[in-house]
Image (cartoon, rainbow, N blue to C red; front, side, top):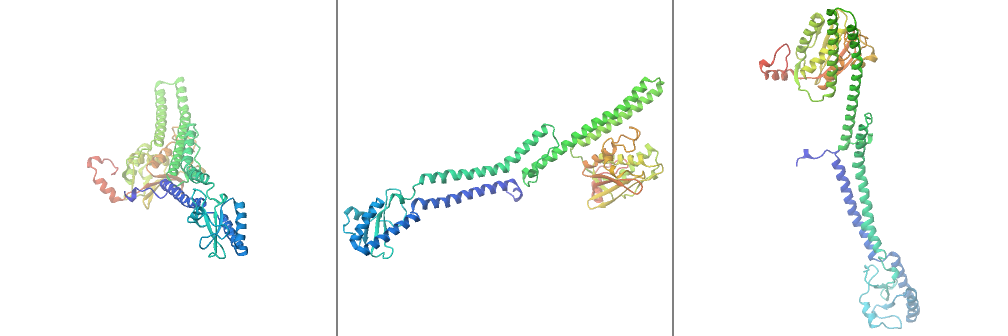
Length: 473
């Protein structure tokens, strides 16, 4: 396995791994520490029991030192009544210090005496030996451990707590963590999908989901981007349908009027042909804009020389508009090569050029210029039409926008710049507008290609595949 195959540092894998490792370590620590604590509680005398038994040994020592065997007998009698257990006081030679000698059974039990610090087993009540506190060599207290001092009285209860309740609680916390980490964002994605199904495309996921750095955050951001894309596509299609139906009413009305009028056949045919061409151009431009907006398949890219592309476009523009070539100037030299799709870029630049010619005065100059900026070429086309209002610089790229109030078909349908912007953005470029010195300046930012790379690519194309003024690779 290579390092490159490992998940990224913000991957959900590491969060799950850390959560599970922490849970396992916590359970191991709990099992060790709590088990050890319960072992002490269940097998060893409590501090209270040790203190009480040590105090009894001190009383027995005081009785021996004060009244001898008689005092010991009196104290042992009182203790047996107090604790309901066998109690004895023995000397260093394991003989009774009272007036009553030990029986054979009691002597046998003396060989199994336990200290206060010894573990206490579950079988029976053990006999304990507690030396005198002041003079351990003189004697010791021997006592059958009272019932109330036996450890492990709640052994079953604590086993249930230790082995059942506490692990269950920690497992529940683990499930809560996994739920918040995985299920909550998945539920939000499911709700988002249900909202889309209800045609509410403007709803977005909460920031706590999209701000995550793991795979679920990436999925959430992809959902939001898809929602924005769907919303813009649906809005554009609805707008195109509304505008197209509105724009088609005018030529259809004119056709109806022309059909009802008493015009001669030749003029009627000319009128019908003109209106049909108008509607055909409108429908084709609308379908082209809709296709550019909906079709997101990558376009085949090639190296394009802007100067050669401009020469072809200006030749066609001069033929159609009657403008002299001297009024369509190009200041971009032959080193300007960009990467893009030839047909799409040509259509975008042609629409921008036609828009500049349409709004320039007779004798005006339309000029293409540009400069290199790192890995991009910044191109701009400036006319002398006086420009547009600042608040309309963004509106000119909207479909069916005609700021000059021209009649549909004569001054265009307001689709050319919309098609140009979508065409350039499809190949990774950008289009924007601002007012220049004498008119409107439309800017294009396109990916640059080194001239020597373009020349090599052009040499690889067969000679028969290159035709016309365009130099492409």
